[in-house]
Image (cartoon, rainbow, N blue to C red; front, side):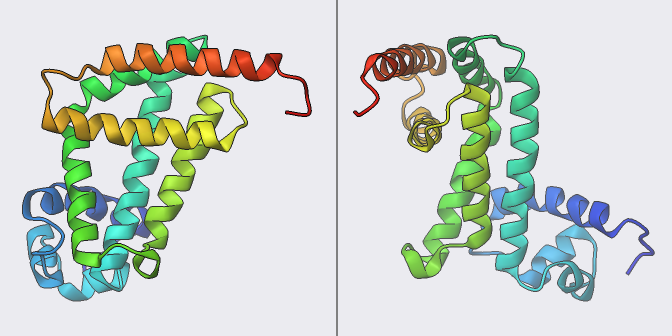
Length: 196
């Protein structure tokens, strides 16, 4: 194992190298030995940082989420209104589409291997999703968790639809529609008496 003074930084470097590897080869087909080989480290080094392939994947998802949120926030929070921020989010998705396609396919591959159902929920993936919801709520200035969940589902669905039919689905058009719908919803909600 190379002499490493900053273990956390080295762990992050390994994780970032793993993204392209997983995206190219798929979660299911890679063994821990193949991952170590591709990273140029021993399996012992890999196990030192990640006790299992699933743990490595979970940490990768959390690291990617942290990185994605910081990058998105840096670009989007410059906008003043919720509408402008949603439009900036649509532009951010468009500019990073290839990356998000890879990420979506990687998630699907992981869950195909792991199976779907409460007993196979990866806690790291769940934490990443919760963090995304919190940041979406903060970015949009809303305190309703259902709205943040809706926007997260909108992002995931929009990316999936673009993968299927990029000619018919526009990030910007969909962002404009979402902004109009959320604005109308929030205005209506504010106009309701407090007991509703």
